[in-house]
Image (cartoon, rainbow, N blue to C red):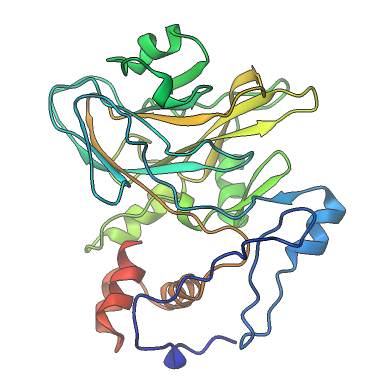
Length: 318
């Protein structure tokens, strides 16, 4: 049992990171906190069911190669288009691993432009580009080895053969399952879901985000891209919108080259920020936040609690 009163007053909380070498043959990265005496139950069950946790997530940020109208902040996690509506292409600093999501949150919008964020994958090192194209669609895609899709007000959902487009089923499964499952990969949904800024109606907005009623291009929406290996040796690309898998947007991607994430900060999307994910056993700060949020009506009530300000901010904003 986690007792909030025993949380250390030093903040931010220490991050429990994965060991340099994972001993688990399935690369299930987790840390058992000795004072909680909890071991992740997913280790044995996932091996038996054939499901896999994603390997330890490194620090994710943008590549130093990007479009001419983009500015990357010193942390490498925020990309802002400072001029015009194009030349906003960014890439992940490192190639992605199978099942690893490159996730961004839309921080700022800009009125007066038509079009929204574009995301995808590129099977080439960004340093090999002579020049970053003005547009991801069609310029970057026409260069080959790139798969990019525009995020539209409709959910970009790709139906597999025989799959029914049942919105109620998607919402029901989303609310009841704490994990996103893409093929054999299981990923905690906690940070995949959009969160409003704290306000009088923030708890209502959060429920709208959870049910994917708000447009995926709205502020605070979280958009991600990953790839899933197939039995024939190729990869399928999946776009994740607020914790919901949109299906295989691109199929048959060659596995010969590393795949980098592509994020085009285009048109009405002004600024995005990379969201760091936690795989395996959650960190202490995440456990504290989940317990606190479970016992408050909405996030404004967190201000009334006798907690350090940094912890309050983490519970409200992250």
